[in-house]
Image: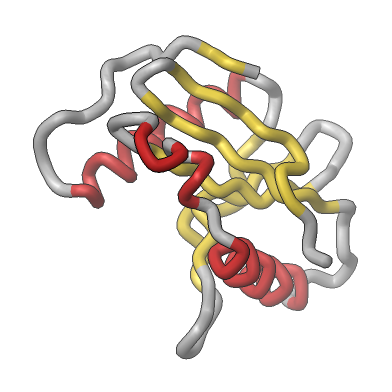
Length: 130
């Protein structure tokens, strides 16, 4: 689903600031869609661990691990082209670590939110753990 961006992309500052701004925009959007935030920037411990930008919950109790990607241009595949199999594995690793701390494993999925100059795109169930 393509949604026009509510703000122009950050043109100054660091890539960390631009990434944080993209995460803020994605979080606002997902909250408007009825999801609520469980955790932000979850990191699994140790070398080779992964990070999950947003961990959200749907109204039906599904845990959603969200990768937010932002690119200033669509060149080289844009934001979506930057999610490699290696990156997916690191996200899955971090998700498994997060879930291992819970008493009961909820239904889960891996979503991606792309923030580009043309707008925001939410890809539900963008990849799986297998």
